[in-house]
Length: 137
Image (tube, rainbow, N blue to C red; front, side):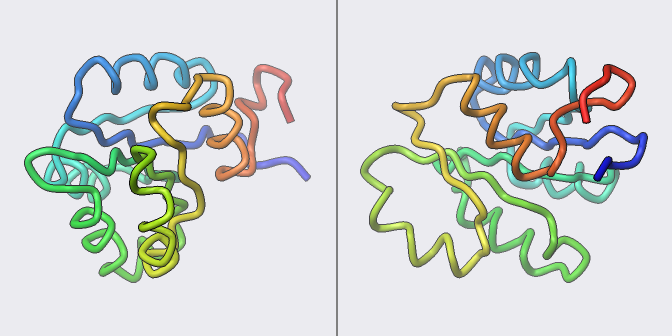
């Protein structure tokens, strides 16, 4: 089953400029990418663009990722948007109940993350492995 001819838009939220740049550039051949450095900028981006998946760093500064997750899930029109949370190892077990509460579909451990696995997770969450005009179904 093929997705429509539109490209999925991924919102990457991380206070670290280098991380958003690397992750965004890696996804760009196959996805539209919007980046934000703060929770407020992320909410503004979600108002402005049709976001298909949110990638959020848990240790987001000056807020934290949980505040952003709470904000996103407080809007009914955003309840369906898949969330991928990038977390440090020490939050892996503690966060499971919280992740379910906010319907986080995936977590990636920052210390264990590689770009290939990151993109595979985005592909899974969006149900699409790239642009149809590039021959990827």
